[in-house]
Image (tube, rainbow, N blue to C red; front, top):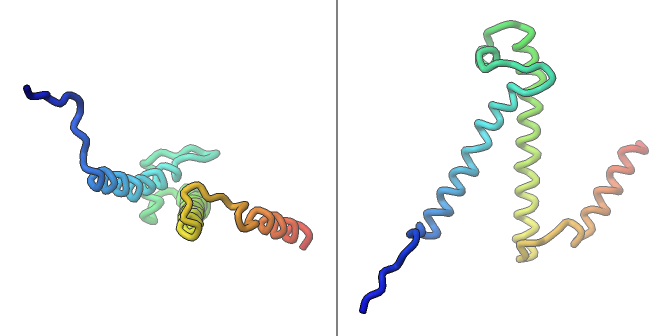
Length: 119
């Protein structure tokens, strides 16, 4: 007597991990581009693309190149640095649920913020 397996066929683990890593590497770039349209003044893609190429209306070009692009780039860099710091913590302590209070990082950050306010 033979039993047939029913259900879905699961992809090998490495294939799923490769697809997930690919998506996580590619997805931030379109989101970064979309963030250039959003803000107090809403812009169309037809306004943003020429501004990125150095053409278009001077006011829009200034808004995109001097305000929105630096803000979006800084946000992406801060997020990437936080991800690297979290991965480093997890690697150091061999614990996927590690948190910043283990080494007193939260207390040190509070001290730094207090010093910044005083000075």
